[in-house]
Amino acid sequence: MFDSRKLKKFWDQTAKRFGEDGYRSVLVPTSKGMLNWYLDFLQRSALRRALNRLKGKRVLDAGCGVGRWSSRLVLAGAHVIGFDLAQEMVKTARNRAVTQGFDNIDFIVASAHMLPFVSQSFDAALSVTVLQHIIDESQFRDAVQELIRTTRMDGKIILLELAPRKKENVGVQFPTACHTYEEAFTKENSARLVALHGVDLSLFLEPFKRIERKFGRYQDRLLGRSLPMKYRILVFPFHLLLSLACLMSFPFDLAFRHVFTRYSNHKVFIFKRFKTA
Image (tube, rainbow, N blue to C red; front, side, top):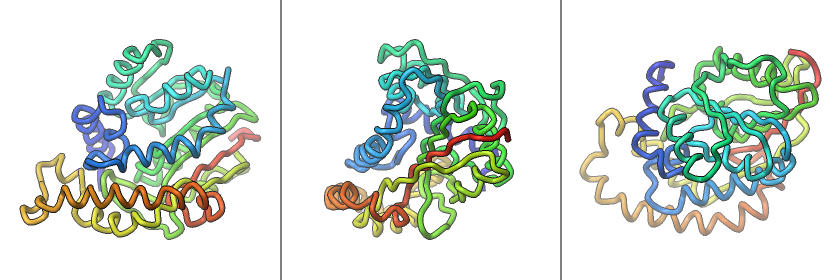
């Protein structure tokens, strides 16, 4: 298990290595095929309607990473402040925003469980695969309360997080934990779940996920532990087959992810704050 100091170092190293890509630093760094594009497409399409309703709103981009969602929020007409635990992520986000012409986004270094904002500072908050990487339960609970505290009354908290039907803590690419989001946000009547959507059934990706759990541990590579030689020659065919699996999963995800929400690996949770935490 990574402590906070190691986790921050982990994200800093990831940003230095893949930050300019925009996908790989915050999705699957080791992927060499179309997997990152596919995951990004699924997330964008799952969040499109919610983001389009944020025009003119002051929005907190929680765990902004390299600013992938901050720029999309600005395009949707929102006023954005992004924060991230890793200084290198924030540095890269600022550089990317200026390059893209979004120099009106404010980025700061901060921890989700201890935000430097006054209560009810934002009309909405967005967290995309961020809370799932807070593996300390105490810090996770504090992060939930901070998102609630800094969102105004009747404001929305929009999450897209790992929430599979079978709860199990995993750490394939990054340290990751499965949390019970509805229970955490609605505790003490601080928020209400108003919408729940599926993101990715990804039926044909399951065999590859099991392989990645065993051999695709990116954190090991950051620490200098690479794949055994006998597996290195299989990297190219593995990613080729993985890309084909993405294509095969595509129609099923688009057609059935909202129908079979409970079977989706990631879910969109939209909470509405209605009582002071």
